[in-house]
Image (cartoon, rainbow over all chains, first blue to last red; front, side, top):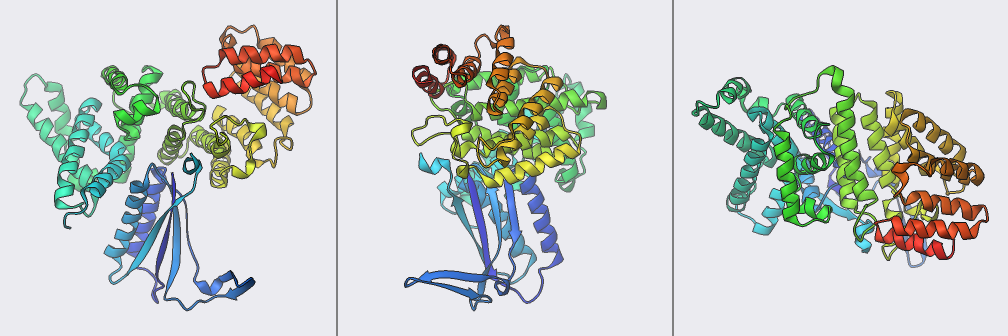
Length: 120
Length: 415
């Protein structure tokens, strides 16, 4: 089963502590070597993105940045046996933030990617 | 941390367990020198977690918690066993091996990597029967329960339990260790063959009602990735993982909504898993740069399909040529059957039929349903409909897969 974890947080003014980056690299390596982590990337600030919407029959394109305090910071795609495993890998990632970046707050949404088993 | 919803904690324990099981058993096997004992202690540790975590809360670092708890129990066991004078050999081992530098050293990644390799090479030892290697690999490296493995192989749980017990007994005669350099190649081959057996049991089930059992295929793909991390310089490790990822990319298109098999020519390629294709191609290029081998060439063939927009657009000349390479690396009459399909697609069914007819007398292919099925297809392409019908009827009679039988039966009527 495939899950995608989307990390949402307030984009900080200062770069993350090197210890956190180190811990994230290590965790990524563990998850990759377990065969669980199959894709991941950090996402640039919304300044570099855009929104394309449809409302009232109109298509609108709005360039970033956007005013929201919180942005999607990164994503990770896990190939695991069940939701509990996806939660466990995500919890490890969030725990590293909590322990190594005082005051940091954020949220990861763990979403199941639809696959053949969803149509059985 | 306080107590939480017991059902949720239970699921967490099991998830952490499956993630960590291989590493825990591997470390314990090094400490005790006995895989059977290592598994017992690992199971005890799981029981401890299932008792404690719902009561005290999930520990802050659940993975290391399991490993540390398991290690303490192992050292306890060894000390107890030291009291038995008869266990002289174990005493000798324990005085050297339990002196592992304590908690931090147990968590040392390089060392755990070696422990994992030792475990993998041991449970996939070529002297063990394939059935044992498969069962032990899923149990000890995949962290699956006996019930889960039994379900995957469609056998009753007591049957699988007995099979695993036999396998563990057979392990007693196998030395727990890394193969010497001179034996590395055949030992790696035995590991890869075991993983590929698991994959194929999921990808093209040989028995039972379902044509695919994705959970087994997924398990094998994850094992392949694990091996990539442990043996990064072995070309064929990447070759096998590439092959499995490329084949698994087709799983979403391999059955229709009613569960019937959809063969490669008829698959809706828009349903192929692009992420797995991308990963498979990357692993394949790594395998190629390291020298390749049989699995790498097979992955090259799978890549020809992955890169093509349609069945017709496939570079069939290249596929046929790759089968020739494969035949020289590992001669097998089955390859000729596959190569015949490629010639048929390249517009030369007569050349394909000649290849198939040349191997049709092979004893090993006597009960191989694909032989008459491919022959039937070639005959149909050559306009020899009556002979094609007979061939498909034979294929339907030979296959043990129910879904495949219905496919062949329909072509026996309308080839």
